[in-house]
Length: 96
Image (cartoon, rainbow, N blue to C red; front, side, top):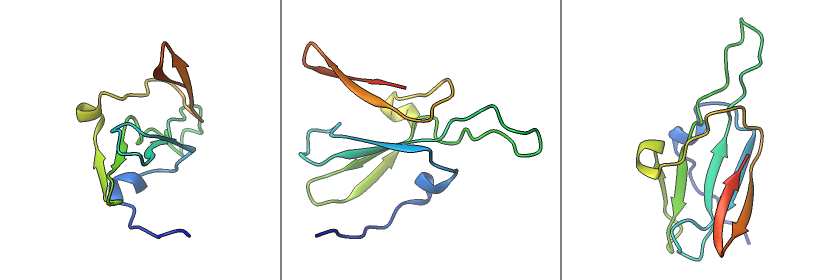
């Protein structure tokens, strides 16, 4: 069964191309990393570059806490239409 939760406005600033789900805070619940960096657009449209590193952590009680890239350390510097997680030496690495 699904439970609907409010998605904070920080997660809704721009078009979202993909959302990576991964447990970042070891809460046994997958957290959210929205991605929306796409630069080759028409001049009058502008770049889609709002989700540069927003991370939404979900705790055991399903409360959502959205943190900026300055706190999370996560940053997408190039075009990003999706991401994958690879495990190297038992450590997860995110690649776009």
